Length: 426
Image 1 (cartoon, rainbow, N blue to C red):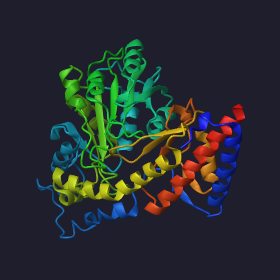
Image 2 (cartoon, helix red, strand yellow; image 1 turned 90 degrees about the vertical axis):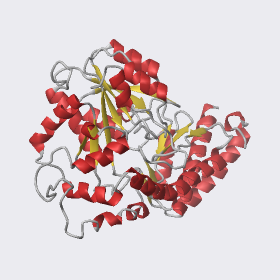
Image 3 (tube, one colour; image 1 turned 180 degrees about the vertical axis):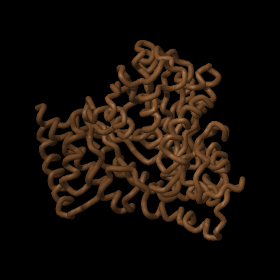
């Protein structure tokens, strides 16, 4: 493969013509693919159809006799807390099992902090300057919560083992307004990075100017492996306890990409003080979660081994799609010095970096030819990628042949945008 950056102008012009011809051929196919979000495919959702029948015997009572059709049990069924504590690697007393959305729980945690403060703090965060650190590329919905409530965001670079901890430590120690950090610590969205042991330890130990600093630990992909050799993530809650900062971390998870994406079970795990504070807020807005759904999940999965066996079925469906993305990028973009991409060991996304200044152009070209990608810049605070180079790739929903088509088109768009830029520079 030729390095585009070192090619002669005449060769680049010929390449530009060839790429336009390939691009126009794709436009004539009338593709219509939406790859903007990491949605499970219908085949993945079918894996959990047994959930719909596992209460068919009319037994709606939990192990302790609770009638799950009725009100109550604010913190979740004991057997649900026991099961999902295993997933998040905490004690059952350290977890609340709630409704269907971990994003909703994270939103509630931020709103409660703004209105009521958090344990160990000096009152509500609202009415004062609040800043969150945002490892980037990161999860756009985290950033949307901050933007919605006027919380200032500072982007922090992501590396191979997690966020730039030198920068995180410097910012957290220097300003009392820095109240927290967003983290997707395992198979991170979108890079696929799993935080190293060192990063976990430094997050737990670091000095913060704000006594009520919080790490929002969105462990969305705790069991979402793509290979038989899973990444290992150190236990942040245990590390925080050892460091004397037990209240620092709020861990979130859900079964949204384990069972049904819109009808799963979400949970928050934290210190006793944090959970008590969070439950006080929950008690005002609900008389209890959907316990029938919790009971379904417990009976369907039974234990952690049941969840792990189920996730192997997900991996078997997802692995060929991720492999197809990598194979096509290597074939089309390898050796041309115009793109880099992640090779995640789990999760739902790949991260594609184009030549600086080209991501928005690539996304626009792909959309014109019938493939919608996540908006360029979405993986950064305020939707602004300062280098205009990162694109999140979400290959889970389309069928394999559609993935191959879409990724070939994306690779053509990456090449075309790069050639245009190089030629424009002269």
